[in-house]
Image 1 (cartoon, rainbow, N blue to C red):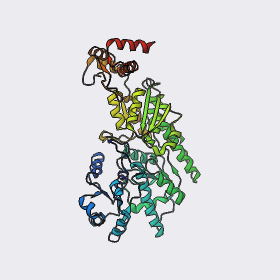
Image 2: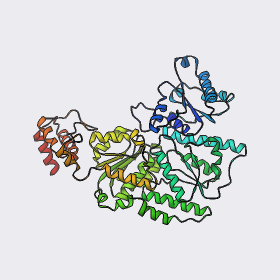
Image 3: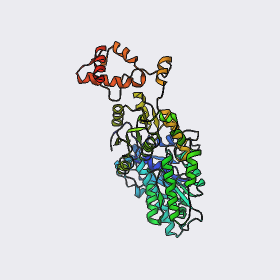
Image 4: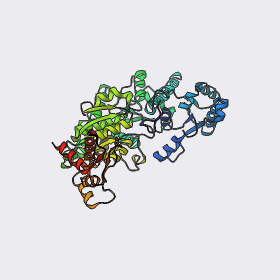
Length: 508
């Protein structure tokens, strides 16, 4: 654990709540102090859900600290079982309950005696895992629980469907463009004449989990949630899975070819090459755009990529392979997935960064001075401070990245959305010069601070005026070079003379 005022991935109980609230007729109870129930408001706002979030906080207050939590937690579980009549109540521990060293499993066992619904304790260690790891583990735990239950009752649907079919694993609430991506995946599998067997946990019933083995294979669009479940089903029921994220023209084609190869091995005969060709040439505008003069203007431009492992890896490949953009470095905050991430991206960028320290990432961006950033909401804030445009491609995000309009990132429609995002994220042509000429609210002012600014260096009014005359798209670089020049020579005040000396030094 560490004290932080901003994190890329939240605490473990948020991951558990995201999975639990995605299922139908599942109610989550978290044992936490008042204030930790912000998840309810966050989900209602971002998902724009008309129903109440099925999460209850069993509040740790002074009475609990004095008498213990068992009575209150058990009462809350029983009360919600009678009021909501869920199929499953899942109790999630929090950092607070861990610090208090409470025996939550005993609470669950006691409550189970009096409830009609199943009661489960989320098996996550809040000191060792984050939100993403917890969501992956919680989904696997729920699936395992109900598969074991169905097997004990000899009620598992093991007979395969007549037509090729698929389970989509890992569609959870508060995912980045998740609802749109799943809609695009439904369309893709329909085009490939593959039947959708189950989509979990998106509005799925836990009672239907016993039907998972009847699908021909499993599909995991995001590594962050669903991969553990796919591996469990492969181990227990010999179900193969595909985990290639269909993001971008190249990776979408690779994903479809992997599905084709798998289905042919399973005894059917399919050929999707014609479909890939038609979609690439006539449906997706991204392939055409990558050959246009507009995209050629991007060739050689420098960008950086940062986000979760799935989206950062896919975006790096798109920029390098499909658009000819130079990726100076790419990185992820998913430190637990470092080996996979490096294997995916190291040939497509100059350097790979694995870190969950947003301060370090900000300093690296300032040092790199890219033409554009592709990252999370935090990189968007950093870009604003440095006057560098940013396209958001990964969680964590703000409400503007939960659009009402249809904006998938996966599949062939996703390629169009990504092409628009990339092109509109770069400052092109005469844009900066026009802003300087005509002014307006977008006029670029001289940056007075940077991510790693040195407060000991100040600028004279004449130097500031001269700096403001420099075109905006290079002003930040000139400012940082001048400050570095002054710092190296122990000068605390930058005057016109210092500016000219720095210019001569850099030019020589």
